Length: 66
Image (cartoon, helix red, strand yellow):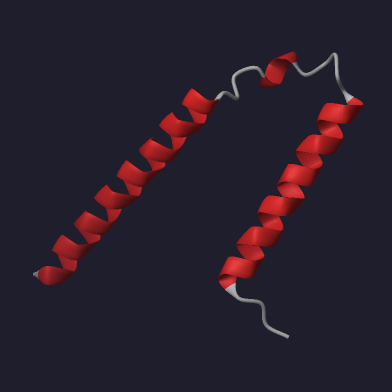
């Protein structure tokens, strides 16, 4: 049975969230190394990846256009 790409992404996301919940419940005192995970850092990462992907697609389009 083939899985669609969106279903696979949803499954990976849910597995990752479940793993984070298990880790946070298990290691309550030793999570200081995850303090850099903030909403602002996530927004910066998403914005940076989006800009990088846009530039990659733009360069790819301009190369194919010639």
